[in-house]
Image (cartoon, rainbow, N blue to C red; front, side):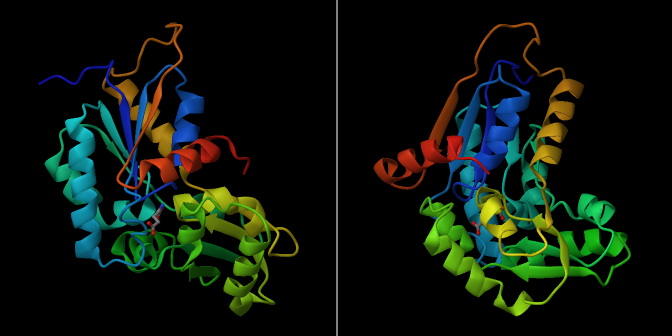
Length: 261
Ligand code: DGL
């Protein structure tokens, strides 16, 4: 059956991280309706094994597709790493995933280290290893897992002393390292970009994969002639679905839609 161009674009994440991707998509495609699915009840995915990540991801994707969407954005590096091939094999819609922005980071670097921040699950997946191998396994790439950081963002903590103390403790093993570029390899981390920047001196360059994903989505929709008409004067609607408690999650979603980073 042909996909209808007036359906919303589905955006999925384990929780709130993908809201940063949604914002990028809304900026590029203001006339499109966006349906955001946060699996907040099961977040974080980063501590799960591959089989568990695939199970929760496929369940979420199935529910999102049942609502009627014209394309699926897996706005989660962890779910992309563990499940993107499985999703693509089961779904006939355009499926766009995340990729940690290691390639642009390598281009930006002129000295020191490139710190790749992601969940433990993303860091151990073959997808990232293949990407790094293709770049010739540069010895200046430093992968670094951030257990606990997703949980803070899930609670809506994106600035302030609790976050600063947490990050200072997390990055203690990196003290003295000359970090020139930081890759935000988890969509949740985009919300704490400013606090992460402040942890390193001199201030590092920081890069994420959100723009790349949004650009891939536009390209894919254009290729399949699924974009709404450019001249159409309409403001797209944004709908939030969550597996978490609605009264707790809705205010955090709204705040993250507007918080600066
Ligand atoms: N937002 C996520 C990512 O990009 C997942 C974080 C998690 O649930 O652990 O990896």
